[in-house]
Every structure is written in structure tokens, then in C-alpha cells.
Length: 280
Image (cartoon, rainbow, N blue to C red):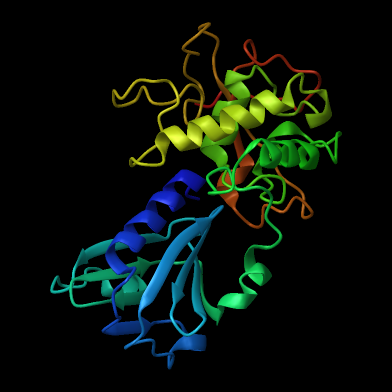
């Protein structure tokens, strides 16, 4: 599932291509909205809220989309041929640009005044325009509301803070030396963890991909994520991976990616946790 910085970047591209321009085409390829036609209306804004995308159209209408596991928005010149048309779920175009949403997990149209129906449950948005010290404090409060919850699971719950996916979950816990199964209430400096999360997403929001090590070299972008069975870049210990298995009340939905956790058992000492074997 795309991380919050990737969704923020998608919103920026949609805004640059669509905002302020009148739609000459709106093609909803989902049964519920197959007859919806927004042509002739001006797009006023496109923004992200955590991992949700909200594209506002004049007349008080919002198009809400979510990429889920493998969705993507692609922006091309209006005259370009539509690639992989059978995977397209939504096309919004004007005289200059076309934005095509492929394999979107959620496509819906709702009154702009009811956006809170779909994003009101989210915690503070790490890349939101209103992010400040008060938002950071609220994120810490929400994380600690269930102190016995495993840190990895609490970070992924978008009701606590919005924007963290599996990549940042693993990388944040490594950088702070926190074992994934350590109760979140035992984290020594939860405020520092939240501040680091904001800095990492903010540093990556204007590029494709996530770099947490500071190295742009291919294969050197991450500390532990995707590196099961390989040596820790800091201490040389084998990186472990395990199925985290969030419960039904975790708020994580059915995202299978969220179940895989990578960590260094030396740099992130365990209180107690399920046994795991190095990945082959």
C-alpha cells in the first residue's frame, strides 16, 4: 500500500494538472457511478488526507479515491493514448491533461460538505497543512491511548496518525531502536518517534520512492524494510521478518503488506515476542 508521502505527491500532480481547469471528460468505470458526469465543471482542488485523495469540483462535489494496495494515478497530455485501459477505474481530463486512476481501491462521489464521512476517523495527518506541535501532541495522545498495543500495530493504525505505511513503520522502529512487539506505552520517547515520522515523510514527499538511509544508491535506500535474511547495515546481525498478524480491531483493514514486519534483533532488543526465523 502506498505511503502517505506517495499519496501527497499524487495529490500534487492531480492539482497541477486539474485544478482551475474545466473538465472535458469524466469517465467513472465503476458500476455505482457509471452514469456520473462531471464534464463542464471546474476542478477547484485536489489534496491528500493521510492515504485518501480528495478532488473537489465546483458545485460542491468531491471525488474520493484511495489507492489501496496497488492503485495509481497517472497524468499525461490530453491527447495521449489511454494505456492499460482495462485497468482504468476513473478518467478526469481537460483540454491539456488527462488523469487516469488505475486499479483504484475506492472510487466514490460525495458532497464536499460530507468529506468527514470518509476521512473524519483519521488521526493527525503527518503531511497535512495544519501539522504543528499541537497535532504532534494529539498523535502521541492517540498512540498512548492503548499502551499495551504492539508498537508496529499502533503506528499503522490511521486513527492514531495518518500516513504511515509498512515501509515507514519498519524504518521508524529501527531508527528509534524499538522492537516491533514492544508495547507502545513502553516507548521511551513517543514524541520523538512522531517528530521523526513527520520529518521522514516530509523529506520524501517530492520524489518517487522512499529513502530513509540517506543513500540514493539502488538497494541502499532502507535500513531493514525488505531486507529479511540480510545483514544489518549497523551491526551485521541478520535482519528478521515475521507476519505481524494485526487483529480485526486494528484499523488496518485487509492489507496483507501490513502484516510483514522487518527488524534487527540486536538494534531493536525484544521485551518478549513471537519467535521468528531469518527470511531465506
